[in-house]
Length: 316
Image (cartoon, one colour):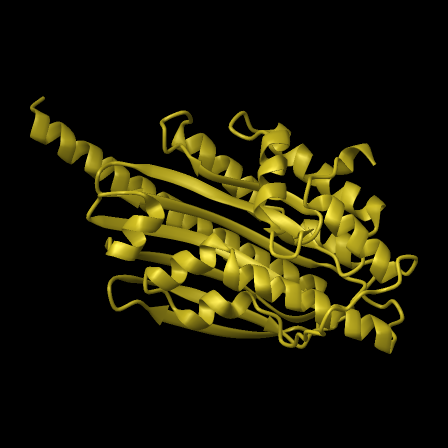
C-alpha cells in the first residue's frame, strides 16, 4: 500500500470515528435530558438547534423554572473549521483545520441547600492526525457537607475503576488544580474529576477513551439526583438566599476568567448563548464579605480554602 493511500485510509477511519463519537454524545444528551426531566417533573424545556457559519452546529437544551432546577442545560455541539491564530495559540498546534464535538451541562438549583453540578466530555481532532478526549464532573455546593462530598467522590471513583484509561486519584488532583479561583484562594466547590488531552500522546486506545467518557456522562443525572433529592425541599431563609447569590458570583468569576471551555468556545466562534448557558440566572457580589467563622457560611469558606490545596474526600 502506497503512502498516500495509507494516509487516505487513516483519514477515512478518523472521520468514521468522529461520527461515532458525535452519535455517542447525542445519545448522552437525549438520555440525560430525559432522566433530568423525569427527576424534576416541573422543569420546562427550551430547545435551540443552531448552525455555526464556519462549519457544524449544535443542539442546546435549556432546563428552567423547575421544582429543583432553576436554570441549566445539557448542550451538544459538533463544530469544525480552520484553526485561527487564537485557537492555534490555545491548542498549541500548527494544524490548519479542527473538528470538535462534546456534550456539556451545568445545573443551578433553586434551593441553596442543593449543589450546582457541572459535566463535560469532549473530543478534538486536527488535520495533522492528532486527537484527544477531555472532560470531567465537579460539584459546587453552596454549603459543604463532608458526607455528601465523600459520597459524590465515591461515585466517581467507582466509575473510574471500571476503565483502565481512567485514574481517579490523578483525575481528582487535576480537578483540584483546575476548579480553583486563585484570585480568591478558594476552590470552586468540592472538586470531582477532570482530564484533558487523553490520547494526544498515543498512550490510550481511542475506543477505550470513548467508552470511559460515555460511562461517566451517562451517569450524570443519576449522580446529581443522589446529591439533590434529600435537600431540594429544605427550608430556606433570607441568609441562605444571600449566600447562594455570593457563591454563584464566585461561579461566574471562574467561568469567565479561568474556564478553558468558555475560552475555547469564544475563540473558535462558538454560539455565545450556548457557551454562557453555564452562568446562573441571578448572582451578586458584596464588598469584602466575611461570614462569622462558626456559621455554616464560614465553615463552608474554610472548606473551600482547604480545597484550594486539595482535600482527600474519600478519607473524610
